[in-house]
Length: 97
Picture (cartoon, rainbow, N blue to C red):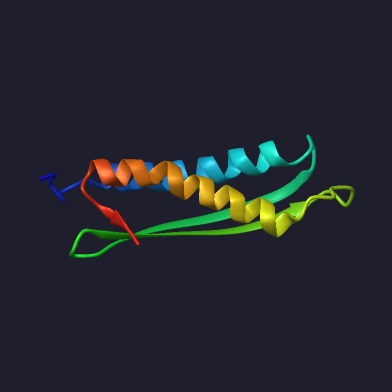
C-alpha cells in the first residue's frame, strides 16, 4: 500500500505541473504571437479518503486574426494537463476525482 502522507512540496509540484502543461499546450495549439494574454488559476484539494480534486481556471485572449475555437483550445489543454498529473497522483496512491 502506498502511503497517503505526502508533503506540501508534492502539492506545489502538482499545481505547477498543471499550470505549465496548460500553458505549453495553449501556446503549441495557436500560431506564434496568437496569445495576447493567458491567465491561469490552479487549485488542488485533498480529501481524507485519499481523493484529490484538481481545478484549473483559464482566461485566454488571442490576437483577432486567430481562427481556432479558443474554448476548445483551453478544454484540450486542461484535459492534457489532468492526464499528465494523474500518473503522479496514482504513484502516491491518490485518486483524482
